[in-house]
Amino acid sequence: MFIWHPDRIPKDNQRLLEKATAKLQEINQAREQLRQIHQNSPKRSNSAPKTEKQPAHAYKTASPYQPHPSQPGQNSQTHSQQTHSQHSHSQNNHQVHNQGAWRPHYRDLNGADLQGANLKEKDLSSRSLIGADLSHADLSDSFLHKINLEKANLYKANLFRANLLEANLKGANLQEANLIGADLSGADLSAADLRGAKIGFGKRIMVKLTGAILTGTILPDGSIHQ
Figure 1 (cartoon, rainbow, N blue to C red):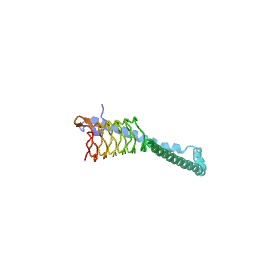
Figure 2 (cartoon, rainbow, N blue to C red):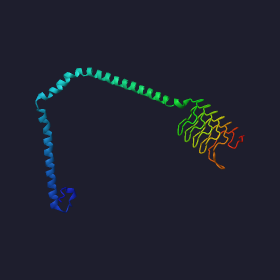
Figure 3 (cartoon, rainbow, N blue to C red):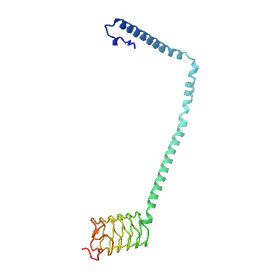
Figure 4 (cartoon, helix red, strand yellow):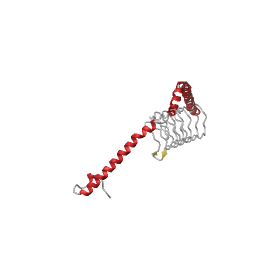
């Protein structure tokens, strides 16, 4: 491979140094010729017929009419924005309506007759079921967070693994109810009747009662919690 640049050739090799210098001169001459050709090329384009400038003249003639079409475009854009805004408003109202209509079936069930109802795994959190009859109802694995079951009848109801966190069970009838695995943390069980309720096996209690209020609660063995 021939290394032609003089800077890369040893100074003591005079023959290669001369050849490299000559090669570099040839390259410089060729580059100068290309530069001259490039400089001459715009002159040819300038000598083109003047008819090529007619489109520019036609464009200038048509330019006074350009603002007029732009106004409908702006109106169209404004109309599109208004339509989008109305659609978004309508969609939001529809969503709010749907959200409001999603829960009414269970929102207020005070005094409702739900004997033997299958409410397994249902979400009844924060609902009001004051005085409702839920005897023999299946509420296993249901989500009853902050539900109001004050004075409700839960006789023999299945509350296996139910989430009753902070539930209101004041005066509720929980006789013979299955409470195994239920979470009653923070629940108010004041004066609730738990006689015969299943809360574990033998001496092992399997109900979570952390922070639960048990004032006056009738315990499964019939004793009253003080």
